[in-house]
Length: 372
Image (cartoon, rainbow, N blue to C red; front, side, top):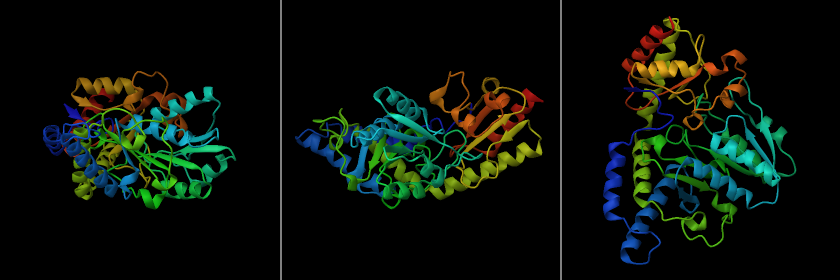
């Protein structure tokens, strides 16, 4: 099977496997227990916290480990909201469903939502955020990198503006961590979300980075784990695996990005050269994740292409995996102005370290056989 769906999830790397197995043996204790076994687990956790902070340019005091990207998004926003009385929310139309659905659910609690517009590429700028701000704005959430079309937002500029306005700002960095440099302390966003399994680490592990200078109060009083921000025994082996892999990835990031960029260029050139009935979204746009390519089919719905390609041994996606089974078109695709009759024609390819040009040749040949 040729796997071209790395934006959905990645296989665990050998480095991550080895770290998990070793830590499961050496640090299996509850990191909150006061005996020696618990202290050992707590030591491993402290080292991971410090290492992770160094990878994102932050302070270890701001690192909170979670069960994954979805919990990171939910817990980050919920924590920020519990530290303000304001009831206005601002987000883009490109947010992951874990944020968009949670924000929508807040309407029943008296919150009001404003959606920030984007240009035809999906880019959100500071001016569009400024227009959405009100005196009662509590939290703004703009994702760093989109999982469907790969657009990368100008988070630093947005964060600096909102910092000046004393408005909480959250950004979802699940897709960008490891692919785009993140400078948490320099950017000054209030909260950042991360996930392990997008970076060859284990599933069920993630992280939040809160700006330590905000001195936020946790959502639930009396919680003892992760500085009081979340309950439940901490998954020390999973966290060690995640951070070890993130450190390894960080070390090799330049070669990885060069590989991804060359694959993207190769695929786009081949689509044009072979006159494949596929249109590349953001073909020439600069601020783009190199491992994600969004495509619109001229003839067939994306789900049909995905199923036919699967029959030929090629795994692709029709968008974010969290939305599989939904009959409605992607909100991302709707927001960038794709024609009504083509909204269901979207497919996504995403590359990994193992992807080759031969894999892309197989994809191109398969599409030819299906569509031409």
